[in-house]
Image (cartoon, rainbow, N blue to C red; front, side, top):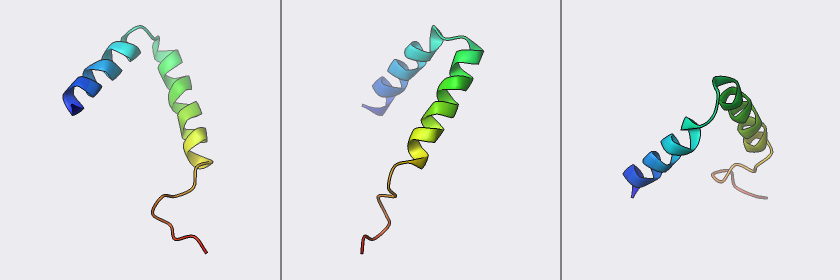
Length: 43
């Protein structure tokens, strides 16, 4: 399953320019910052 997922990601990114990949990584980083930490205990 993990190998199939990796192949899907590689194919999806293959059509993007280096600039697009960089922009995507930056945007995904922003999304991640706004997500609660799943390992942090809630009050």
